[in-house]
Image 1 (cartoon, rainbow, N blue to C red):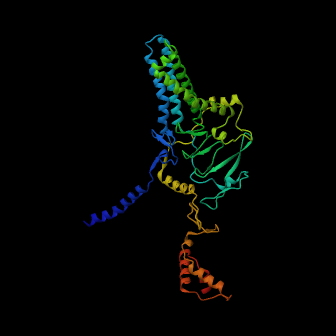
Image 2 (image 1 turned 180 degrees about the vertical axis):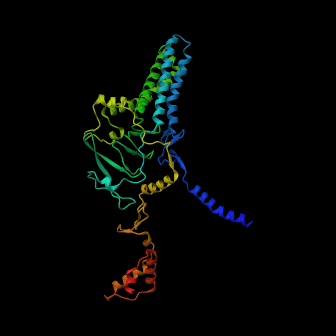
Length: 418
């Protein structure tokens, strides 16, 4: 029995160590599971949607209801006179409807060009190694870090200003902006479209243009052939319209909708011809200075239609450790809130405390009680005696002993005693 108990005593510590090591091993998770943006993911992070992705159902309903109604209407008219004409009209309506839905979901369900976040701000030396007229500086959690809010970069021989993002902890690339809805910095940010529930940017802008263009064509197509269906019937027009309510409803609906999607299409064709984004146009970015990105109308259209879509900068299915994510979350969340303590500042990496004047104070010293010393100095300053008082009280003696215990060094007071 004693041997067994001794064996259990020998095994128990090792097993507890193994158990503690198992608990200390950080869990690995997919990046989309811990992503700090407001995106919604489907199919294991393969589909990336915006925060308001639920509006996609409304858009699908607004497009699908009249389109499917028109196709069913043409399908019922096939057995009537001229079936070949009705077949071609039906096929055209089905093709346009399918293409419209494809472009819609390719716009909404893909990464628009999200820029990866930094877990720590860039090095101050790197940030200061540029010419910048900005006098506004970034100084949040780390007092020894001083970054310019805006810096200048050269694009096609022109000076372009890029801003520092406090949320993503990076200098945004040229033409990038931070979407407040999705909470991400996005490449070549155009706008956030509530109808598709996604940011429109570098990687889905071509599909967005195809979506609104196909929607415009679909509205014109249904509007036109609904009129043809009315005019091909014999009798008075008003009498025919009173009996064919479906065609009349489609005509009214498409007439109203074409002004929205058609106007949006024309506006984006203008932006493509001038190589602007909606964000830049609304901010009058190039009204008083030359646009460094435009290359002529034909080249601008060719750049959009023939250029390769940029590869995603983030693999949302990559594995990350949950421990690193927690540390990063605590740092970023405090930095985003602009946390600044009025009396002292903390260095997150070194665990060092900074005083009011910004000087570094060691951890072994900041917990000491200096009340007795401060009171003694105040009494000295208030008295007329200029000589050094060799007598100290018990509180001061205890404070010096505590300092000696933590630092392992002799204090000046001990030297004087010797």
